[in-house]
Image (tube, rainbow, N blue to C red; front, side, top):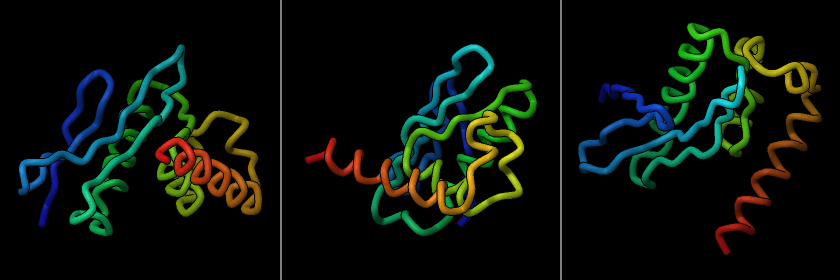
Length: 117
């Protein structure tokens, strides 16, 4: 199944066959694009949709000369796994070790779970 990423001034999204949407919310503060929240409906998870949206955000950031700051756990996970894309990150994140990426991901995941409960 092929998915198309669309964009608004605050959201990258994919329209799904179920009429639902997967989305990645963001905001631009100065020259930094913050990736705030990623959501994919459960039945569409594991199909690369979230990664597709993050890649589209990276492409957009590069085109506009922006740096990126991953805030949500999925965006952190993406950059943890895709070292080749880290050049687009803000300096603070480009310098993180693998261990620090693991810690950042774990901390953010815990914060998100606590927020939902």
